[in-house]
Amino acid sequence: MTQIHVSTTINGDAVEFLCEAQETLLDVLRDRLGLTGAKEGCGTGDCGACSVTLDKRLVCSCLVLGAEVEGREITTIEGMADGEILHPLQQKFLEHAALQCGICTPGILVAAKALLEKNPDPTETETRYWLAGNLCRCTGYDKIIRAVMDAAEQMRGA
Image 1 (cartoon, rainbow, N blue to C red):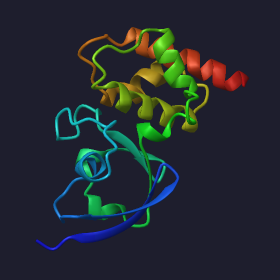
Image 2: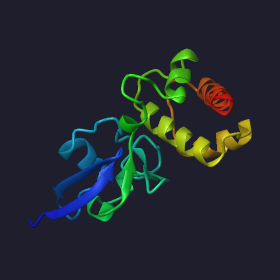
Image 3: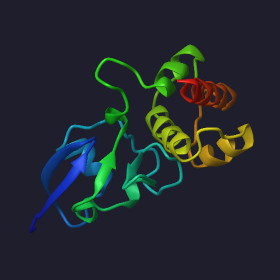
């Protein structure tokens, strides 16, 4: 098959790759670029485990073709921390024990970051609605919501 050449920006870095026309962005990230933070939970856009931002818009990378990201800006969980310094959301997830198996965690963190960039002072209800597209089978959601709310408060005060 003919491969497609794609130039894009991922986590602030210019990136080029070759992909098949039918290859998803999730597969490109994981298999071609070694960015394995986004997980495939369902492959149908129903669980949010593969969430990334594409031009600052939250998307399920299993529903986007790799060829579609030409010239666009992607942010993954790997771009969230600043070197060894965790993003406040990541730190609060640790402090609140808001993770267990880790399959959903990267997608939830990316989604929560997108929420706080759009609305730095969300209500608990807004936070729950925003994260409704991210499924977790281990922790329940209370610790996750508390961690996001706590991070939002810290980020507003910073």
